[in-house]
Image 1 (cartoon, rainbow, N blue to C red):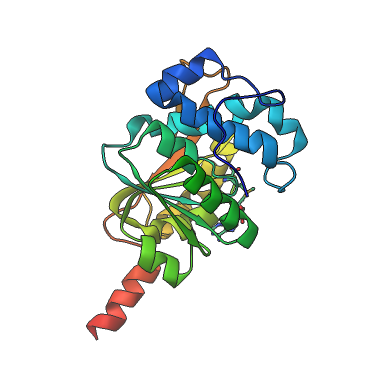
Image 2 (cartoon, rainbow, N blue to C red):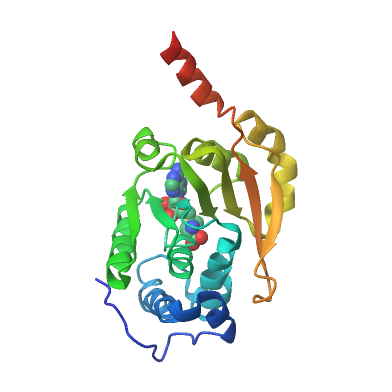
Length: 235
Ligand SMILES: C[S@@+](CC[C@H](N)C(=O)[O-])C[C@H]1O[C@@H](n2cnc3c(N)ncnc32)[C@H](O)[C@@H]1O
């Protein structure tokens, strides 16, 4: 069980100055989350041991900066949250967002629930796979779906687009593979009901390596599966 740490000690990396820019008066919560990850993340199989020293830049800040274009009060579903990335830093940076974390693995769900309770964050946690009907029923109609290191773009689009309202956006944190994935999967994404993927960078002012994101809009026509479902219903 994790505890709500207040303050940062020894093995926990100190927040860089950019963290205050990103988190503002919620920096203490970001420090607590980072401290929990540094203390428990390795032993609980959530992060590799080499990640502890780079938790701020490569994980916490890298995740939080993608909130920049999200509209106030948006519903955000983070699929494959794992250690809570990007969903928990997003929730800390932007308390107006209504965030749901979706994760199939029991021990990761346990971790996410403990962190949400310890930090008192208004986040829902759902155990399941993004493509499951029960998850779609609980979390569908979102404005934004986020995912980091979960699946190749086409597969991700197949899971994420049905969770979005028409006009909503998949925001996939992709890094160096972004251009290659877009070139490879553009047609598949269109067939799944997505618009042309675009590549954006976030955090250029605060990170040495900005976060590279692939953004896909769910087009109003919906996915093939939605259309098939609607046709069956209309018969
Ligand atoms: C490599 S981890 C990345 C975790 C986290 N997003 C991060 O960036 O640290 C991939 C996560 O996706 C989850 N996952 C795999 N397939 C999934 C699916 N179909 N729906 C939701 N989550 C899934 C895994 O259980 C795992 O926690």
